[in-house]
Image (cartoon, rainbow, N blue to C red; front, side):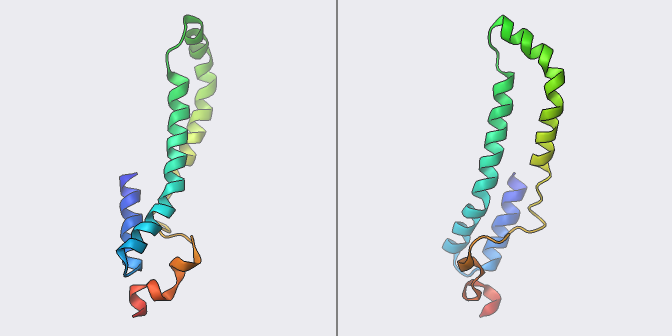
Length: 104
């Protein structure tokens, strides 16, 4: 996540003259990704928590069946490539040539 963040932040800073605009764009670009990662992490952790003896028994019996589902979810999570298009297409105001350094 830190490498993704650094790629996106550096692209945002390079694309605009205003640091405030760059940080606003960075936050808008990263927030959905972070929310997705937090959601998947919580779901994964919730499945592994201790409970009653019956719950532990059921978890141990079902775990071999549920592992492939977890693997598929992880593949989606790790398939993300921030380096391919770090700025994406977000809002029209961020694509405004007046905000770009090379437009000057």
